[in-house]
Length: 288
Image 1 (cartoon, helix red, strand yellow):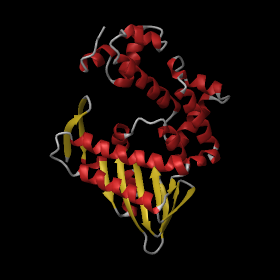
Image 2 (cartoon, helix red, strand yellow):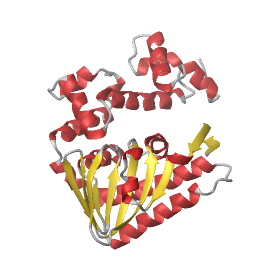
Image 3 (spheres, one colour):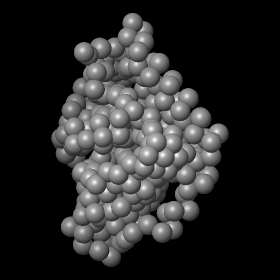
Image 4 (cartoon, helix red, strand yellow):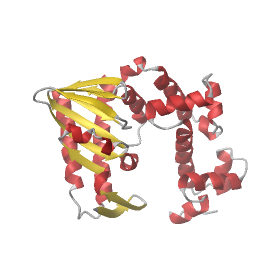
């Protein structure tokens, strides 16, 4: 089943497997869901498993968030183990994630330690969020179906950010070297270095490491290489600037230090799938 609907400025087709709920941990952690973001609330008992060679343990009132699913093995459950889970494809998570400064810090911390300790009250908040996501997911006749599902996921993630940032952000102090380097790299991007520097070599030099090692660290910590994040920050800025009526396409290219408008056009075509002029025409924006 697919459900076409209007999402923001363009049509989006929400597939049946974009959002899945299951209370079967072996199903949730199966290889069939590699490439998804897995959210689990342990409602009773305890679970231990390994992500690659890393051991993980979670018990009642713990939340497990694995934003970049990899191979999970050696799953062991205590007597009476129960859980609830929401499994969301990376494709739909990218649309549903709230615009928050905490996103990257949270993702890096969760990549290092996917377990979030919660109070009983906080567990009830997240379980309520799960229920709301499932409710919206079942409203197939809603004219803004995909957007409603995305907004319910956004609220769930904001609640998780709130809990994690208040109680668990200190875990960043104990992250491993790969995650620490990736965090420093992301901070450089957040400071705006991407506006004039889009080469991995620049950031590696700033961090006194090789470009290859920076990308290796980024992949290990987040599942994406360094170029992915440079393009991500640059593309977000391009979209923001293209929506400004007071800037020509040449102005936007100049602000982001592209040598020529032709090079800028090729870059935008590669990252957005449209040329700057096509993007503006698609959304009825000033196209000069």
